[in-house]
Image 1 (tube, rainbow, N blue to C red):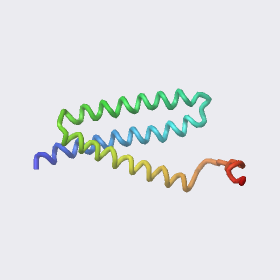
Image 2: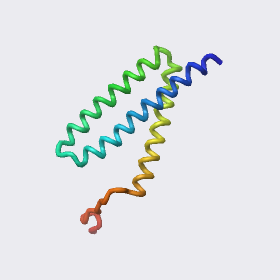
Image 3: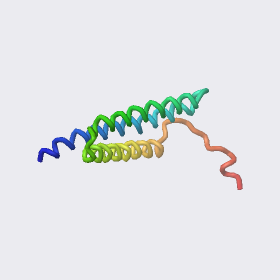
Length: 106
């Protein structure tokens, strides 16, 4: 029973790390595609998101594989939530985006 009390905070930390990582990716894509310097957005975001995530996994695990797995499960669950929100917003876009003409030509 004591193991569950240790694994729940690790799982919660994984969901927070996943939300930061994948939410940050979504935000970076939105900002990067309209930026005159998209490489700076994507490279800077990648380095920041990876650093935060790897340090988070390192500190949460505390050299225990059980905590690392609980954190990873939370991370993957957060990915699923962010992906679901992303795809639901793609179905109902808020931006006016025109389809490219060359895509419809034979």
